[in-house]
Image (cartoon, rainbow, N blue to C red; front, side, top):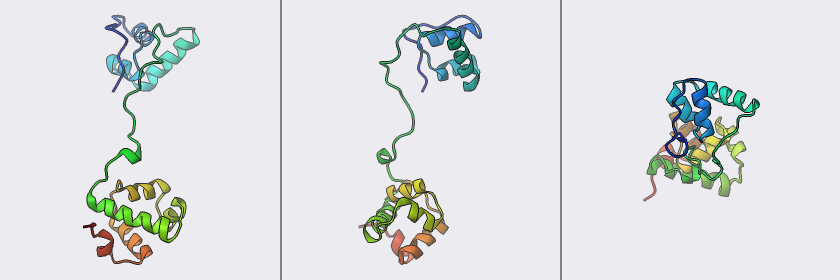
Length: 150
């Protein structure tokens, strides 16, 4: 979501004066990009050059809360109950039974640390090869690994 200028301000000027006026009134780069049909990098370069010439924002945007962005992993919901069940078993295997770090387990199953974290949270959509590697590593049958908790 892009941030509009403060109030109902909208510059009537064309490129490049209009975007600078909109930015001075509090518009985000994304909003300017949509309004003028230019790429984000073009808008950023224009504003950067304007700042170098001494142009400053007229309105204070420090108090505005940013919107959007990626949801933290801990706040995301598991893909399914089955994914979550595999994740719980994997977490128990890694932390309690073996005291492995994310990196050590990641190296054992040929993924990265973030993928291991997502697996444990039920946020990773497993491939068949990953399920087979996990079952072999944990010394359980694939059916047992995939069995949901009751």
